[in-house]
Every structure is written in C-alpha cells, then in structure tokens.
Amino acid sequence: MKNWSDLDKRYLWHPFTQMLEWTDTDPLVIQRGEGNYLIDTDGRRYLDGISSLWVNVHGHCRDALDKAIIEQLGIVAHSTLLGLSSIPSIALAEKLVKIVPEGLTRVFYSDSGSTAVEVALKMAFQYWRNLGRHTKRKFVTLAEAYHGDTIGSVSLGQIDLFHSIFQPLLFHTFSLPTPFPYRHPDLSLEECRDRSLDHLRALAEDHAEEIAAVVVEPLVQGAAGMIVHPPGFLRGVESLCREFDILLVCDEVATGFGRTGKMFACEHEGVRPDLMSVAKGLSGGYLPLAATLATEKIYEAFLGEYAEYKTFFHGHSYTGNALACAVACANLDIFESERILEQLQPKIALLQELLSTEIAPLPHVGEVRQCGFMVGIEIVEDSAKRQSYAPELRTGARITQDVRSRGVILRPLGDVVVMMPPLSVTQDEIRTLVASTAQ
Ligand code: PLP
Image (cartoon, rainbow, N blue to C red; front, side, top):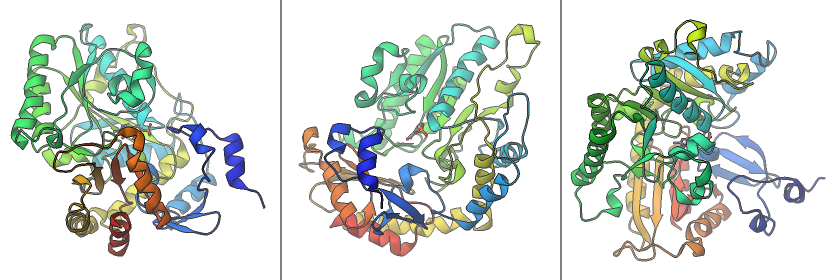
C-alpha cells in the first residue's frame, strides 16, 4: 500500500504553509468524506469543524449533489462561455439572481473567491472609466481586510502577514479603521461603529472624485479573526456610498450561503450592494466556482459599439464550468427543499448557548465572537488585560492540533480558533464540536 504521507512530503507544496515545518509532521491525509465527517487513510473519523475551509454546506458525499455532477458528466463536463453559452451556467445565474439582494441582476462567473473579488474591482474601475469619470480609480478597504490572494485582491487586503511582502506589486488603497469593539474597550459599540463611519465620511469628502468603490466583507471579517461589526455599520457604509456616488462592493465569499444565519450577510441590514462577490459555499463545497453579481446600471455602462471599447475583457478558461454550475444549482435546490435557513436557527442558538457556557468562561479566552455559524475564539495570555500570547508560541495552532487528536478538525487564524461547521451539522455534533474544543 502506498504511504500517502511520505508521498505528500515528497511532492506537494501546501498553501499558506511553512513547508520546512510540514516535513517534520505526519500529515493527516483525508481519504473520504461522509456527511459532516472526514475520514483519514487509517480510517479515523474527524468532524469537519471548518467545512473544509468554509466551503462545505450540506455535508460531504450528499447524494443529490453527487448525482448532479454525475448527470452533468454524461452530458458535457465543460464548454466555454466565451462566444458560447451553456445550460447549467444559465440555470444557475437565474437561481442566483432570485436569491441575492435586490438590484443585482447580472452574473459573471469565475473560479475562486479571489477572482470574484478581482472581477468586482476591475468592473468598478472600468465602470467609472466607461462613464468618462477617469479619476475614480481608487478603493477603500477596511484595516485587516482579507479579499483573497491574487494581486488585485491582495491590494485590497490589509493583513500584513499575508500581504506586506508583496507591497511593491500592489496598488494603493485608502484604509478605514475596522470597527472592532474588542480592540477598543474604551468605546461603546456605537462609538466604535461611528469612528469608522466618520473616517469614511472624511475620506469621501476629500476624495470622492478619486474613489471607485468601498469594498467590505459584510458583517464579519473572517480571515481577520471573525471580527463581527457593530449593528448599523454596513448600512452606514452603504448610505455614505450613495451620498458620495461611490460604488459599494460586498465580498460575500465567506459570509454567503447561510453562514451568518441568512442567505447573505447583507440581508441583516437590508443593504443592496452594487457589486457582490460569492464563491466558497456556492457549489456546496464541491467544485471551484465563483460569481460576481452586478446591478443593471453597472452592466449597462459596459454596453456600446465595439470600437468604444467598453467591453469587459476578462474571463478564465473554466469560467462557468458546467459541472460546477450543475452542482451549485443542486446546492441551492437543497436550501429550498430542506428549508435549510429555517433548520439552522435552533442550531445557531444552541451553538451560542454552548459557547457562552463552556468556552467563554475559560481562563484564556479573551472573547468569543459569533455570527451564525461563523465563530472566532480569541485566545489570550491574560483575559483581564486582553493581552495576547507571543505569536511565536503559536498558541492557536497548538490548541487546534490538540482538538484534532480528539477527532475534530479546526484551523486557527493566529490565536483565534475558528469554528465554521457545515450547515448540515446536527445538534449532537455541535455539542461534540464545543466539548472537544473546551477540553
Ligand atoms: N474573500 C473573503 C472574504 C474570503 O474569506 C476569502 C477566503 O477566505 C476570499 C475572498 C478568497 O477566496 P478564495 O480562497 O476562494 O480565493
């Protein structure tokens, strides 16, 4: 029998991984999935507490999703959207337009969250150009934002660890302070929110003619450590965008498809973005697929005679892949047929209760942040002083490694332990998830 672990170390280069450390470990090699569990090559079962990096929605090996791909395979696996169209890509676009915030009417496909953001920023840039407003070419993003790892999306991002090394390749963006209440114990929730909004207002007053768009992760900044914005922040950003004629781009890559308890995070505040990026849960966690949704107003600004060069010259070889669109359609059908968002509410409440009784009181827990099924547990050396551990101790990584030995897969963001189970997780599995983490 092959030793997959040794072969991994010989041939693979893993993302976001110091490979020198990796060679000293015995990598966990997953052989198969079953419902909310992943099973390794030795037959050990692990609860998938991070939905395979926030993508899985209804569990692994779901019959209806498997069948959708198999059925589509018997028809055609892929045909291009450049110059042709395909039935699954049209069917999915129709379904998406029906469930996204009102006003988003056009669907542009790509393959990952990063590319969905990249498309949004190129669209925003070209939108103003097509209207003859050439000065509107800058972007405003939140401190600690994460929008992906292609160069455009890295330019929008503000997590130094991931982004600063590429600085010479990046374009300049305006930065907005993150409304992060835990870091500002001196401010009330409202003051924390207003501080960021005031900053945005000042920026807009001075630079509206330079700003193409504000780009935000709505409600929750995931990769920054599950920072949950104070109520009213997103709505405040939207209303400033309207006041100063700036586009609002919502990056729902992490928050979309039920993660926050509603289909999209924007819905919590009734916000209607001009552009919205989705990926991760779009295909139920099965295949790489992403989409950027645009309003009719934006779409129309790209119409014209060919020689006006208003065309959006962008697209990947696998854009609108038929297998991925077919499984995404089946994924959305499950939301409807099984009333997933309704089923989710008691599970969110249970998770909240267990987090507050079993995790929050632990001595080294600084804060538990939760929005639906997005959870970040901030581990600190001294919770009264909100003092972090030295980063080199890798406390978050050590904790998640321990939790893994108890049969639950988690992944930290620095010293924030992240929980993001599939929406299909059962109440018993939620109890296991929390109890294994609290031990
Ligand atoms: N945007 C947000 C908010 C994300 O959380 C992520 C990934 O975590 C991305 C974009 C990038 O998505 P992908 O990893 O699919 O490129």
